[in-house]
Image (cartoon, rainbow over all chains, first blue to last red; front, side, top):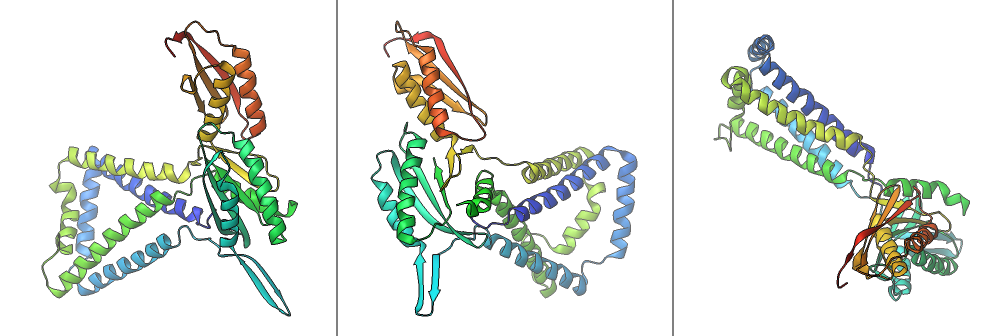
Length: 176
Length: 194
């Protein structure tokens, strides 16, 4: 339920994958076909003439590219899994405002479900989905218990929570 | 609560598919390590200090000399390995990455049930209907089919229709999509002493 940019994940995999696929295939076929190998040898010879890696300017460019790549990818990795929300409901008025922390929901719902005979563990967490606060109730069931019975029980707990909160936030139940 | 429907649709669609975070992070970390190494070697070369592993100028010369210095079979082998790695990444990028789960009908809440939880519930139901122990029923749940295999105790008949009806009842109660079709197989040979 997090806000991970899945398109970006797949784009990175796709771009790097295509580069490796094309380079690998090119090396393998060029090495297999003598005429292509000659083209390769001529090609790298002209690169060798045009490009001097020992020049400080070249080293500076290489270093700059490395730093930019590292910075972008570190941001990319750090941004994975975002989207947790601490505040579930915010109500503001002239007299002041009230924030309801997602932890309140977590504590109440976990306590209400912990005693259910079919439930072996509960974890409730708050998320923000398209700017809407939402709850995820993750349940593990004991072997053989019916997910449909548990869902009915969870729905009842959620309705009680709705009454406490005074509004209905979206709730996802995952049953494993 | 119809106003939550778009949110529920998005949540369920996302939760039913892999975000591909693990391979993407692994790939990003690998590229960061390589870039950090190349950057460090460049600085060391500029400062005139000895290289950590390979001097960048030597590496460049080696890359230029690659088609002449390395034998063709080695180049072909290396190229194929790199291409296969690339193909694996492309497949990760373009395949849907469905998780082994089903989603229930959305009401006040949305629900996603793992295939293992479904299989476990069906197994319990089937075992009770067949009058056998829980360990005599094996259920496998795929995207559209739930297969229930019952091995009967030797000398005791199993009412296959009762088992099928019990399984069907549980599937109807779950009401998941993609919808599940069930097949019940009672093994011919009984289990002795079970």
